Length: 317
Image (cartoon, rainbow, N blue to C red; front, side, top):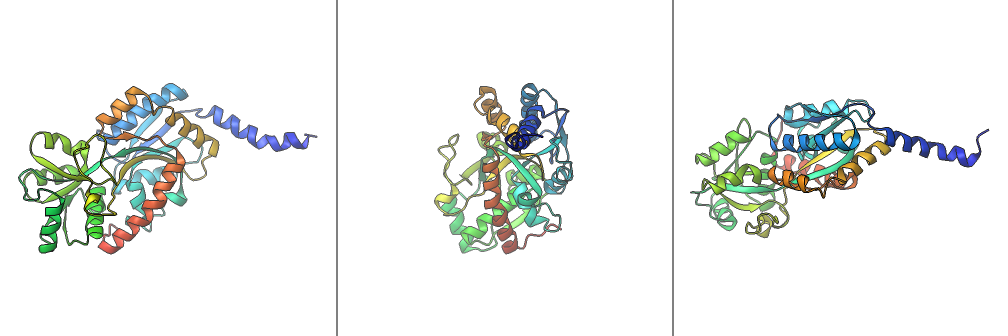
């Protein structure tokens, strides 16, 4: 007979053994967007570093489509054995609002592993625009409701939702113009076809530096350290925060020991000079902050996007 104290220790020992042995085979890291973008670059860097530290390949699997929901669904439906995870963007928080019948609420359908990075986003206009600053934009938009336009990479995309939230918080009537992807929307901005776009700084800074565009403000709560001269939109529109971020999650039921080992390994990368440099090149600020940070972000943003999409009448399905 096993002594009672030893019997009570068995689950702990089994969990520790499971964590120590994971991963025992290659791990799939699904990115629900096409190859070649900023998040893809971050994913490939992480895959390389994780292989070195955990001894198994981390295989990138690009599965674009339906605003990221196709790739996320693939992971939700995977066995919870640590063989598949998703590296995705803040679209993870908006999917329940945009696809309410899909059953993809990450708060109840997934296991959070880590908030990976914050991605500074900015309100951008054409360099020749009459919109010289946020106060000018607000004055014109209030004087002429519906006149100003903002473009996006499609209905329900992050830049669409950022614009809808801006209009909602500021009490503006802005006209949304949808394009087939973020790149065509940016091209339309530079051609003068639309008035503004909400886009990541990694996409826009080269055009700002080339004199084709101007940043009116960042959409974070405060100024971004890398762009101290650019104000936060919230300085004139209190309460407006539209964060873009990257995160890793696994299927529901993932053993907590596996999630903890994965999160701890990611956290150990945070201070590496190469990680800081490569994340900066992708226009991101490394977080690698663990499951609690991701869970908090989801608890805040899932209800937010449900309110915003309902108020703006945004429907994808």
